[in-house]
Length: 138
Length: 138
DNA sequence: CTGCATCCGAAAAGATACTG
DNA sequence: CAGTATCTTTTCGGATGCAG
Image 1 (cartoon, each protein chain N blue to C red):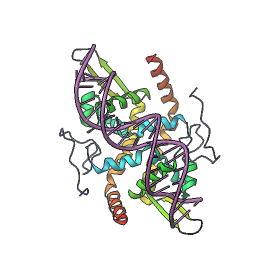
Image 2: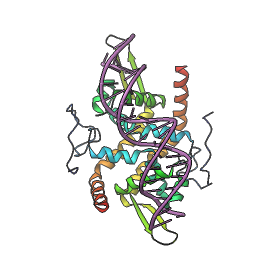
Image 3: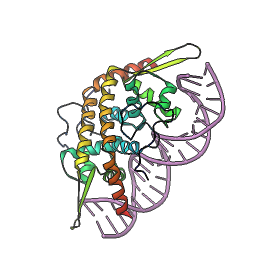
Image 4: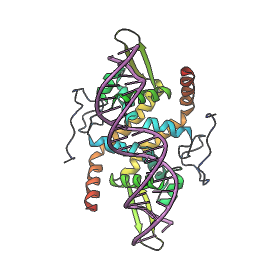
């Protein structure tokens, strides 16, 4: 099914990465779908937020400021399905559900966190570039 | 304007990252907008593709398999505005426009590339997790 | 409290035709 | 070739309501 490697890009270009069987640059490669979950706006923030530990649904919702209930729910399901997040439900009353990163999720989240910190660190340059660009247009 | 640091998350939580003035976890923080450009599905692939050098519009389109003209155009504009991509147009006939990473863009793209390679490398685990999850649902 | 289901308007993505 | 304009389809995001 979806377990076999995907073909290279149709034009027959040499791949950028290396000899790996999966190539995000190819149209229907499963790696692209997973990458999309990981880099998705809410997905990336949720993963990064979970680097701090285990959280309940509404705790996460407060941490990832601005996320709607629906999107957080969807996001957590997708990340759980990808094996990045573990969901632990206790059927007490009131119920308690905790979300935490798996080992794989931690690895991915750390990598993501580096990207986030890079962007935050060089944000002034990017904001300046934006201003310059906007001024050029006007 | 948009140059001042954004407030922390509303609940008053201590921030995850560090002492940086910008916090992606806060609702209207500019860093979140930029991060969105960088992690966007087409944005991330475009940045990674440009790690290989300078490309013309349609060359890029073939590299980033499946992207529509509109989305590539939008994506390139956003990345150019953020100061990550440089656009060089020659008004010859036919016209020739080359896109390449700026120094900042290269830095960001390298970080992104690490994430992509991590995801590609551990994709088998993620696909297995997906299958297990789907089986559990059925 | 932790969610899922549903509806709705708004926004974004996708496909494709057309222009300089 | 390098895009923009336009149209359609999908997704997003908020507001419920409801169940365990």
